[in-house]
Image (cartoon, rainbow, N blue to C red; front, side):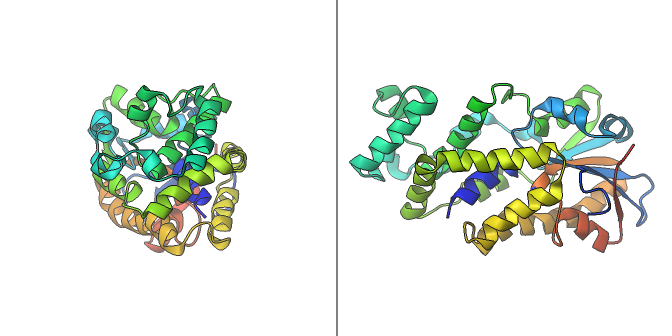
Length: 299
């Protein structure tokens, strides 16, 4: 069941006539100047921004860029030290798994990292991370291992804020990093923790194939196909309705409620995971329902 969460977490730091489109213009409803929203894929390289029609013109025209979080406020060291990332009470990963299961986990780690948790240094570094969080980190590592052209320090989400800062523009965030950490690192049962890591270890080829499928439709800029892949996970039971609502729907509604005040003050480019754009409860439709004109940007 947990394979959906592993891949969806990567898609999320997912009609109008043009389905092959990631960039949308928001106008009307009292706005003096239009704002824009673009969908991202969290492991897409920053260079892909150049492939999005009209992107440079939009960046030049806006006064500020809002991401899901303000990247200037993110302290990577603080996140890495967060207690929510680690097994409670100073425990280790082998507290969760049998010897046979640990052998499977170590075999997978050797496959992608050339080292495993029998190494004392690796056990101290990775062996204390909660299994569910380790699984998410490993699927990203697996994807990047197969795509060496992807530089983890230069991905598309951060790119737009970095450009804004270089040009002296403001940046901001729709959420705080504390909120995202609480959402992504929420406490889970021992069985859920076990399930997420074993799902990756035992089905890594399927999970990577799912990520590749998502990447393919994203790079084709087809957010409808992307949304349909996500819905298949929900309809198949790989994700619960509660998980879907927490990760997607509730956040879409919150964003669509705070975006109007932001847009009223400054022309803004919003940068969010592409999985949040499409559907009846996607950000595009919610903004339309609020009275805005939302249309694909085409040259």
